[in-house]
Length: 112
Image (cartoon, rainbow, N blue to C red; front, side, top):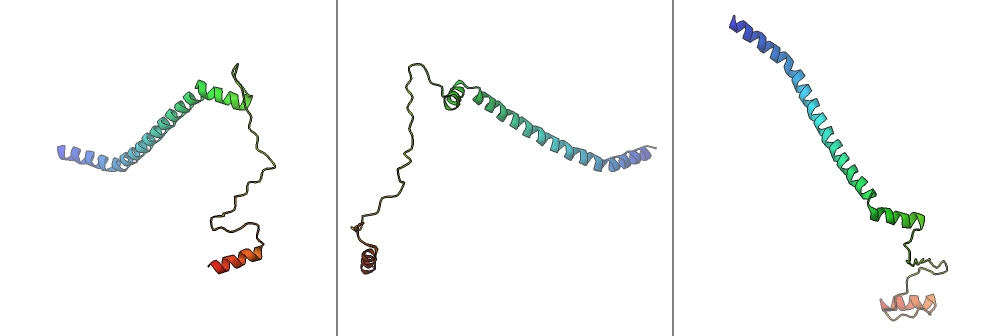
């Protein structure tokens, strides 16, 4: 009789084994999702603290609302639209920049 009961229990365990493995995998996936959600939650808390920081709020007010403190002098620096951003010629070889191109080519070819 005991052998029959042990056989029945073993057959039930063998049949339930695939279901137990599937449930275990789902449990691991859910634990990973929980860990990711907790990580995102902590990052959001840090971002919230940063955005509520007085220094951040003051900086944004200065940028977006042109805020200034009493007695503070604000200086605006504008880019000169007439300025040309061209690099200076390299005069390290002693070449003159006022020479015509054909003379520059001759100097280049003869100096090689």
